[in-house]
Length: 466
Picture 1 (spheres, rainbow, N blue to C red):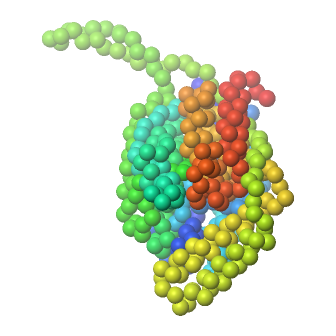
Picture 2: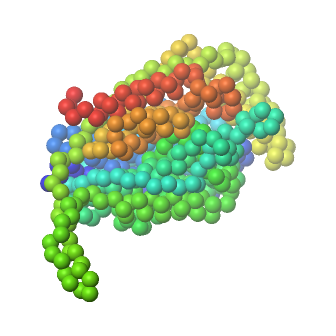
């Protein structure tokens, strides 16, 4: 009998109408009108005889260090789980509430803060609920493919690199699915892992949405009867093949495509391997073999968790004072146009102000530093490895880590445990473009993530406990 236990909890984190939205420099509105679909935080707690680990999937663009710490502290206080055994991940939806750049809010800041203030208790409650629902489980994984994503770094004839559809660029279209079933075969939880920026719904959208991850999760739950967690992959240079729209039907449709593929993969997974043997042959016109399929006795799946701080080298940034002056000038230009300019002028000015503010913010945060501590976390559940980092890693990082992993099923993710920052690969620095321009890291950072990530996976593969 399995000594592995798992339980699921969930809380609703849908913002109230009037809560500021965030995620787009070209956005001309601030307050959202409501929500198209509910936004959730879903928690999975996995435990064995000696330890537990919690995975949380939140429909949010992300949180800065301050709010991430408050959420993690609330989980720790209510559940007793140490921070290194908590993985708090975001789907990175761009059409949710503004949870990461409060300084840009000039209308509805009180509602944004009130929303954030409530999240630590709600999310901690979902993790606690998962602890109360622990039940013996078996675990297995499988994979499929879905083509709703594309490399988004497009080089134009004039040499500029913009966000578009680069059909020849590297992309990972693998749909990775992990199933946890009760010992009676009833589904407990399904993990869906896929890599694509949730930027289908863009600046035109005035309602909160979980974007395609929420739509996909809904389909998986509908088809499998189990709670589903969406684990975002390495999407730094990966976007949707259709996006930047205000048409709500697009995210629902693409999410459904992904969800149906994930549900199909889930249906093919067997968490109880069986041995097949012929018990008799029945004569019925043709001789027909009759089989018995008996469960194969297995060792309990090994649960292990590792968490390390790795030092990533920072880029040489321009002087803070210079960048702050540019940001202030951009803000003044936006203020002048905010009441008298056309919608296009307002959108362009707001975008320039947002970008200038981001560059100044990064320079302030890392002034005088040469390296930044970045959390690398690994969770092993039997033959499945879940590896995560903060920020937005490029797809090539994931592809290299997975190719060198000792595990048959490796799910590499960004957007975990707080922190912002693109992690471009070395070749991207020669090309330039948005992700490189606002990344705090040097060209060496991606190589370090790959090296340390593979090392952690090899350490997780060792059977002896640390």
